[in-house]
Length: 258
Image (cartoon, rainbow, N blue to C red):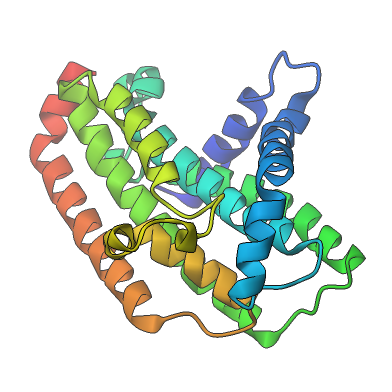
């Protein structure tokens, strides 16, 4: 895919999602803010005490910072995964008329969602400045963690996108998967509130390591654990390779079915 086409699709995607909406782009931030507000009001006291016991004490804003880091990252991951899964169906009219590099088509979704994520984090950083938060050089790890996260989302989404052409239930499956995955990740809660027997299960959850890494670099001012990130990058690369191989094997059938 050439750069100008990718730019056009990204721009069109950002325009289309707000067409006909009175509040327009504000809706991108309203729902995350509502969720953050609800979770903060419900869990702030309980989780605030847990965070203090773990050395994550930023005063009255500890849980808010902890929560926002996780929620914004999860929204980016889940939205990328869901939209890449559906991309062949959404762009079927274009695919049928124009010769596109089919398996790089979802890149515009990746770029579009990253733009929304960065805009959301501008507001988050402004909030951190207001509360006199200390920034550090460890924030330079942020793009590395983000790379691992989005490679995983793109690779998974691409595999599901290919399968969804032949299996209609994939879309619903991904919806259920993201709901379960959200609650199986310590985004709104601290893993220490769970029984001891549950904790080893989190080690198998890639997003557990991603959100922990983000909190390490953004909140604790420390380097992330390298081994889990390396494993996630390796897994994502292997899955992306498999997705591209599977897609090329089935490309003719995909175009026929669409």
